[in-house]
Image (cartoon, rainbow, N blue to C red; front, side):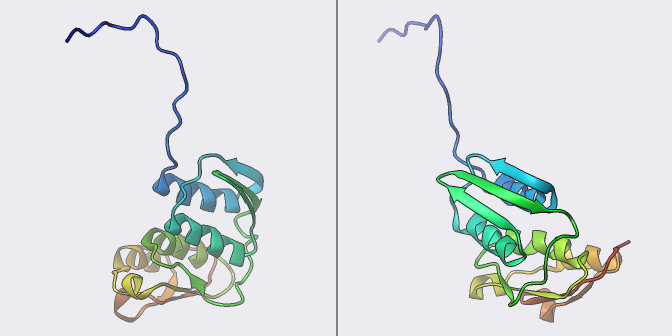
Length: 153
């Protein structure tokens, strides 16, 4: 076998969306002012949970294949959800939204499936409590009841 080196390489490489980045991009976009287009948004149930929770908080979201357009409402523009926010099986959704919701001026509840209810949330709850957040969590697990309070220290 003989390998011949190529003189040039041309083309485009499109990577699949990254779950970790997609969660954070969605939440930060929701807290910004105006429209943000996130291309190559991860197609995962966890990221879909984040989008559903943001929609329940009053954020307008449009999806088209792997592109998501999020109409940001500003960091204090989120609205009180009518029901508990269902994070599904997404620990990332629950952990990130706990911090966001602790600084809002309304109370909220984060719930998840049976598996998520068994995962510890102490590593997020304790630092937020040190900053002045009020969070009820039996055994430091979901469901989490967050008593909105601003500003945190």
